[in-house]
Length: 318
Image 1 (cartoon, helix red, strand yellow):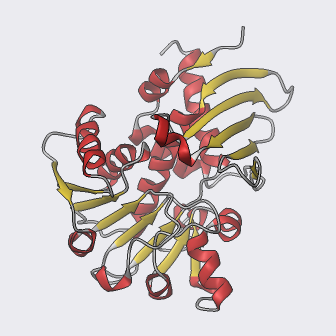
Image 2 (cartoon, helix red, strand yellow):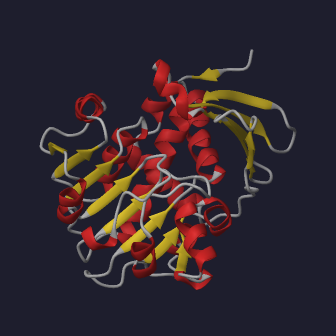
């Protein structure tokens, strides 16, 4: 029977220090990750199907199937559901089936924390979470691994959701020495933050250049379609922009596609992708006053990396 590695097992075998280190190595290797297939189920439906293949020759082959249903919150269901299947690349033999949601949550957070090592100020102590979805607590805990975060502030549109997220932060393991605050005024919270992590499905900008303090690092992880926005045009024009992959971000990220189409920025505005940072082809942040933006839409490279760690842990009986 094909083994299934569930959410609880994945959380145990994918600690952030291990996953972040593995991602750093993975992005320096030759991995084949074609641009994901995106399908809207119908004109009337808001549900999106994502199919993400990835492989490393003579090692493993993976395929993640994801559904994104924004209206699920109306019935109390998660917005995202996902499964990941790991196979032997040489023989095609299936090795394991994994909970794709937990895999995605942890690898997404770890990738942002890895980018932050190169793009945020080393003394960054105040993290602002914009959005209260499932991803928010994971992002916070991962960022605390790579920077000396002392305060996490949470902003969302719904006060009840803000409270739930602050409670979840502790339950998911945010260290006790890190204080947690709730923000009702987003502009004031943005001005005070060292790192801003936005994980929403907004179609209108939430973070404005006029609010951002010099030296801030902004991690945009929510928008994964061309009609989604989390930052305004002025911020994108003035920030130093980095992406997880050129191929994915320039094809899918509304925060970049829309300003490009308007002629407000050129392709050269995107300075480097994550592989350039980890291989030191680009130095990342150059001084303490620049505003940096890391725009990610997700890449199957991260899925394969996390799945490989989980599979080896499963084989070892952990």
